[in-house]
Amino acid sequence: MSDLQIVPVNDQAGRRAFVDYAFSHYANDPNWVPPLKGEAVGMITPGKNAWLTHADQQLFLAKRDGKVVGRISAHIDRLALEQPPEQGFGPGTGFWGYFDAADEATGKALIASAEEWLRSKGMTRAIGPVSASIWEEPGLLIQGHDHPPTVMMGHQDARYQAWIEGLGYTKAKDVFTYDLDVTHGFPPLVNRIVEMGEKNARINIRKVDKSKFDREAAIILGILNDAWSDNWGFVPLTDPEVEEVGKKLKPIVFEDLIYIAEVEGEPVAFMITLPDLNEPLKPLKGSLLPFGWAKLLLWLRKPRARTMRVPLMGVVKRLQASRLASQLAFMMIEYSRRAAVARYGAQRGEIGWILEDNQGMVAIADTIESKVNKLYRIYEKQL
Image (cartoon, rainbow, N blue to C red; front, side, top):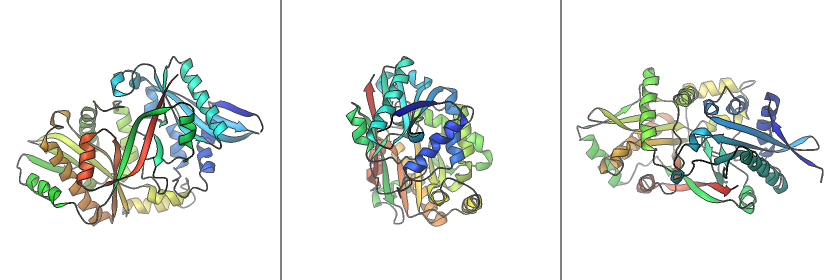
C-alpha cells in the first residue's frame, strides 16, 4: 500500500476538495443526498458560517498517490466549553466531524490526526462525529441506512461504526428521528386534547408572519434557548447564527407550517415544520447548473413534498412539566399536519432529532403513533 498522507486544509481549493470527496465516496449510494456544493463549501469557510465566529476548526484530507481518500474536521466550540459538564460538554471538550474514509486504515489515521490537533489545543476529551455544530448534523447513522435522510440530517457509511468503536470510542448519547403517516390523522385521544385546547380562551395558536420575519425569529430564538437550556449537549444559538439560518431557510419557510403558541398573549411555545428540501435537491447532484436553479425555483414557488420534517419544537421551561405543554404541542402538530396534507401533498412526517432521554418529546412521539426510523450515535473518548 502506498504511503498515506494526512494534510491540513487551509485554502479554498482544499475546502472544495474536502466537499468533493463526499461526492466520490457516496457516488454509488442511492440513499445519500448530495448537498449544493457552494452551500457545503460555505459551511466550512470562515466568514461564511456564523458558527465559526465562536469556533476554531481545522480540516484534514487524507491522500494516497495524490488522490483524496478521506476527510475529517477537528473543531472547538468556545460556547460549548462554557457549558456545565453534566450537560455533556464543558471545559476540555473538543469535537470532530465531516468524517469519511475509503478504508479503515485511512479512517483511523484521520481520527488520530483530529485527536492530536485537539490535544495540541488543550482538549482532554473528544466527541464525534458532530458536523460541525450540535445544531447541524450530530451523530453517526447507526440505523436507517436503507432510506434517504430528510433536510438537515446526515447519512454515513455503515462501516464507520465498527471503525470508531475499535478506536475506543463509547456512546455518549443517541438521538432519534421518528417517522409517521400523516394522511390519516391522529388517535382519538390526541384529537380530544386538540379540541379541548381550541375551546380554551387562554390559548392562541398562530401562524408566523413572514412579513415580520426578524421579529418572529427573535421570538422563536428566545423560546428555544430557554426550552432547550437544560438538555444534554445544549449550546445557545447566537443572534448572528439565527440571522444566518433565517436567511438560508426563508425560501422554505411557509407560514402555515410554522406556529407560535401563546397563552394569555405570551409566546410560550413554537414548532417549525419544513418541506423536505432533499426531495428536489437529490436529482440536482450538487449543482444548480445548467438548469437546476430553474427546477428548484419552480419547486419553491409551489412546493409539493412527500415528506415534512419537524426539526425544532420547544415549550418554555416553566411549563414543561405541565399538561398544558403537551396540549400546545399536540395542537401545533395537528395544525401543521392538516396544512402539510391539504396544501403540500405530504404523506409522511419526520420528527427529530430527539434525545433518547427527552421523556417529554418521546412521549409525544409515542402518543401520535410515530416510530423510530433513524438512530444517530454521538461518541466520546478521553484523550
